[in-house]
Amino acid sequence: MLNYTFQWRQAFNALPDMLWGALVSLQIAVLSMVIGVIFALFLALGRQSNNKVFHSFSTGWVELARNTPGLFQIYMMYFGLGSLGILLNSYVALLAGIAFNNAGYLAETFRGGLRAIPFTQTRAARSLGMSAPQAFCLIVLPQMFRIVFYPLTNQMVWSLLMTSLGVTVGLNTDLTGVTQDLNARTFRTFEFFAIAGVIFYAMAKIITLSSRLFASRLFRY
Image (tube, rainbow, N blue to C red):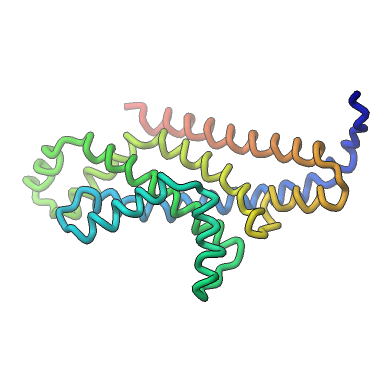
């Protein structure tokens, strides 16, 4: 028989701390996306390169990121590198693990976006006097980002949710870490994690709806 007594007042009193933790989670997600996008561009080009070393390195990164658990990747950043004498704090290890994962997934997304753009676009740009880098940055990249915009949004949401794994490497300043600390002090597991779940859901929906609004204005033509 259910005899649990809910005590929401204590949980709501801790809401400011949880919202501050949510900002830390969002910060990690945004930074991991920025880093992931930069590396993903190079990996996507590497996957299409004729240079065997560049191609093999890019393929290895993508295969490892896409075919191993995100938790494993974060553990390797924290415990694995730590055993080799490369010590990362919990924040940096979580950020690096998520960025590594993002780069692997986005590399394949970008590669698909690049292959969807006809080569005649580059040829036309070159015929107008643009250099190869100029044609890529000014003609190809804007079209690619338009193609992959919605997958980027999905990856951003995924990055936000992955920040919850930071608690496994001792991070206690993000939303999950703050919630776990509050739970350990009060034993009000349901109340605190229910509120944390609502906050995660709200942030994910805000990201999704904001991207739709942005796309409706950016891609009207």
